[in-house]
Structures are given as C-alpha cells and as structure tokens.
Image (tube, rainbow, N blue to C red):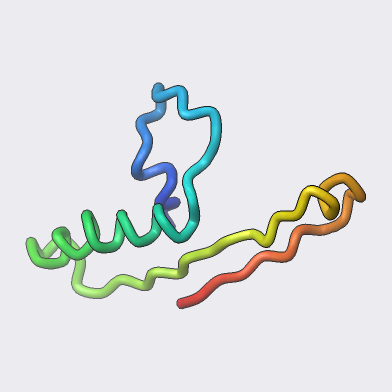
Length: 71
C-alpha cells in the first residue's frame, strides 16, 4: 500500500502535521495515479480513502478513535 499523505510531502519537508485524508487521496488519485494508469504503469488500482473521526473530548478521555474507509 501507499499512503497518499506520504506521497505528497517530501521526507525532509517540515510540514508539522499530516494531510487531509479526503484531500490527499483525491489529489493523488486524480493528479498522479490516473496519469500513471494512462502511461501503463498500473492496470488496476484500488483506492480506499480512510479517515479518523477526531474529537478533542474523545482524545482527552483516552477513548478509541473511530475510523472509516470507503473503497
């Protein structure tokens, strides 16, 4: 698998946070992966955009953070 947020930022780029799940997955899919498919680098891909339903209260109470994925 490849993480879309990691694909956007360089290893030495001081971004101080990750990228938006929805924004990163859309950018990588439509800006990079589909171009790679046109060039023949991939025949099929599965994109599963994931995200976490973050809440300051949930974090402060040390509860689990629900996650979601759409494929």
